[in-house]
Figure 1 (cartoon, helix red, strand yellow):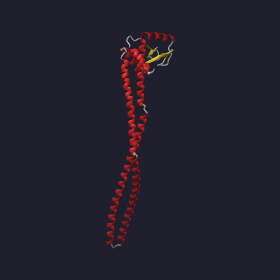
Figure 2 (cartoon, protein in one colour; figure 1 turned 45 degrees about the vertical axis):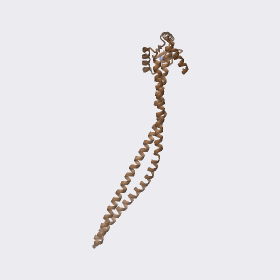
Figure 3 (cartoon, protein in one colour; figure 1 turned 135 degrees about the vertical axis):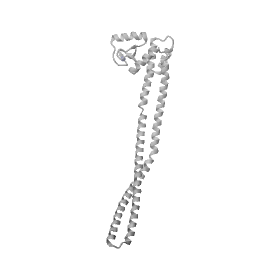
Figure 4 (cartoon, helix red, strand yellow; figure 1 turned 180 degrees about the vertical axis):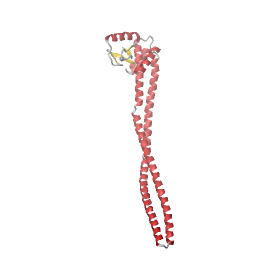
Length: 255
Ligand SMILES: [Zn+2]
């Protein structure tokens, strides 16, 4: 049904002395509004903008995780370097003490023992130097990695913001449409008898779509055929009250 046809119907419906035919149109109009609103609610839940935002959010989370890893590893390396330097300084002090002792000893065995201790210290210092050098090399590489990583932050955050805004815009548009439909619904309910309106709401809550048309022998709601006798009864009831109940699905059947 086109909007123009709708408007024409509504004009006819709101005229005094409305007939059963107008009740059928009123119900179809109400159903059209509700169907449109239902579709919008589903669309709002399944917006591609939501997927975009989820992707961007996940990219940002991955980015933050990587930054944390880099910063954490750099912290560990700094600790390794500092502790190697401190240990080295201690060994240097020990070595200096031993060298001073060397100058005072006379016995060759004692001198030999001191030489051995100095060699052990030198070995440890070499190990510490290797350890520190490896840490320094890794630190330099990770510093570069971190700089490059931080360089991508701004564009990722901008993309995330823009996804967020795009989703908010589409949701706002849909919400505005839903608000318009809510107004239309109030207007569509106004001419309806309260018992018809509550019957409509009850069928809608159980069947989803409350109003269906009878096309030939078929209910367009449940797509089942009515028997010839049921069609006759339906036509009689519809002529009296504007609609009948589908004997198969219970929807308000417009004949
Ligand atoms: Zn049916």
